[in-house]
Image (cartoon, rainbow, N blue to C red; front, side, top):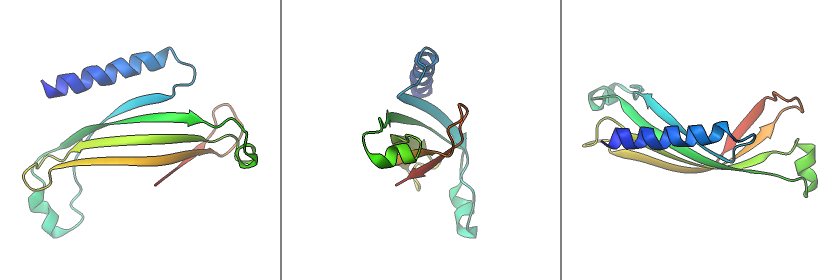
Length: 117
């Protein structure tokens, strides 16, 4: 039931984004596994992890001089929730990050660099 609710919310936001030229929010689904970066971690991996992330963007308007110099970057607030696959020992993961998206050129399909804190 919980997975159906998460997928419904995710698809709802995705459909809204289709009608926006420049979305100011969005969601993404995540699925994978925890990589055993240490031999002791192997016993902790009991299942696949899944989760979602939601973000909100604010476009700069060029009032500050540095914004025009860096091709009008945008600010982002991002929340990530991950079910680790081993609730007893690893639990859930939550993260709230601030990010700034710096365009690298002025092209329409411009490349961007995302810096987060």
